[in-house]
Image 1 (cartoon, rainbow, N blue to C red):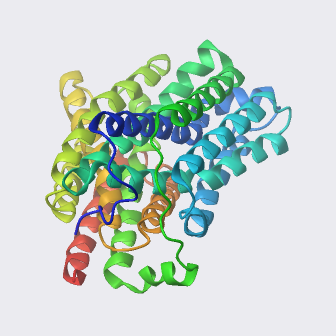
Image 2 (cartoon, one colour):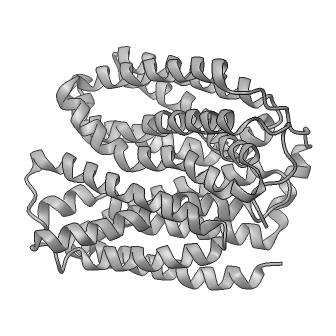
Length: 394
């Protein structure tokens, strides 16, 4: 079943479609970077606001769990609105809250500046994916979603290293000012260049929620939770792995993470090619590659060439799974696709949180050397669940 369903409006020209999807992709990059950039800024924020790093780290938790809890109901309530106006409003909201973060003088104001955009992020994520699929048409829906996910994947992979570099060059406040300015610029670009997209029919919230009675859909959402848990057991602590196991100097870790993300973006292109054929088969392939890459990191850590090769394999698989999971979940339903897409966003954030918790417990009780093995085991668990989900397919 394709992500594409009935067109939202008459198909615009190919050129306008390409421009619109490109703007949505860059907007997605800015919006998701807002979530992940702060990880690289935590030390400076803690020093400037006189907080402990662990206290400042609660800003990350607040954002992730706000997305997880409020994403589906807000998307269900707002997905019928005019998409162009909805996207512009969300980008203006992000511009305002990033500006608020840049001038925050205490934890409370900064927390507000994090919670408010966290409510809008999953709405954009879910509806932008659906809109891109509709604009591109049935035959290219998966690739269009992958292009939007190129921005999302770039933000998830590059947000932390960008934050690390930005904190050195322009400070944490400067980083938020840059995000505010670019968000406002993208709002103007959407207003000027994006064709009007007709509203979808407004569905009763209870009618939309019937998708959660579908065992196949729920199984795919749970599969995304396990997939993202496996991914973020390793990625959350990749900087620590590079320092402690591979011996990378702390000053160079940000650039290694940048390289990991840049090489990994190849996976977005490959995943977009394969997901239209079979979302489940694509998930299985890249889960296997992910498990191999994470498990092999420690054994090859002292060989620069092999380390780069393994990190490349891990990065490609990691990035490919972002759009694949989104398309796989959205393809399970014939209605309420925006809600389905946002449910995957919530699943991803649940996995991110669980991955960070499991990874932290692994570091405490088993040591850094075991991190890749534990992550690989969870990836294998996801493969088992995938086999169960396949049997639920209608």
